[in-house]
Image 1 (tube, rainbow, N blue to C red):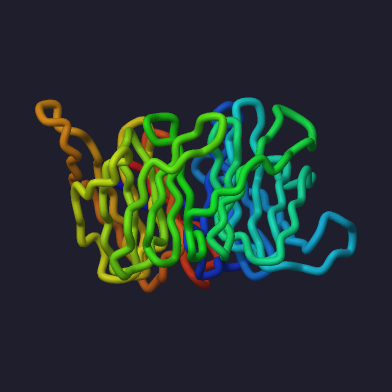
Image 2: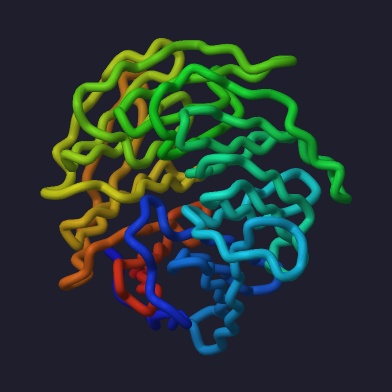
Length: 322
């Protein structure tokens, strides 16, 4: 069971974008960072335990790295946790911007002709998807600004909606607006392991855990696939409306889903010890009344707490396990 905790106020409301919430827990500092996109800016907030102390920063997305550049509209803000550094990455209409974790200093700018729609890290690389279906792979050094574009993956034909990664048999999964998924293995270069065909609905969010792909779709379904071969193992009618966000707690296998129907659902993924089959169990349901949810994330790797954003909602609602 989860109960509502003190909300984190935002300087502006959240835009209706997929996966419009990023969370960075800093246990050594006893702080949690939150980021959500609104219009041409990103609202950053850091909160102490209990939400008693909150500080804010507004980060304006720019069309270039120079001073005085015109504003650009971001699609996603996400913290990418690499072995020796943490970067805050903004994907926007005009390209990719990478900042130090607190948003204070831009360390890299990569301009593109079309929108960049999502990003994800895979040690020691960072991947970003574009509206044309390209997936850009960047090599990121342990420090400094010598970030380089190392590879471009060209399997998708529709706009990339989300990217997820883990170290395992499959390293990277990319999803697009048609609902197709591509599963990749990282060696010296990325190679395609399998392609999971679309079935008529956009895949808005995708997560990878212990060789299990969890994908959320516009019809409210969550589908679970084997990462190695792409076999469909389970279909769950999780929501009455479009799913906007999924998240996984890596230490426990808890799966979170948030949708336009105002509900956050908590699930538990596991494998049968006898057969190895993928199993899913419903654990909790929470209604954020009269709110079109657009972002939801666990706030810790165990899944003991979570947060959510909603369209036109000027706060981040938070819940903790009882």
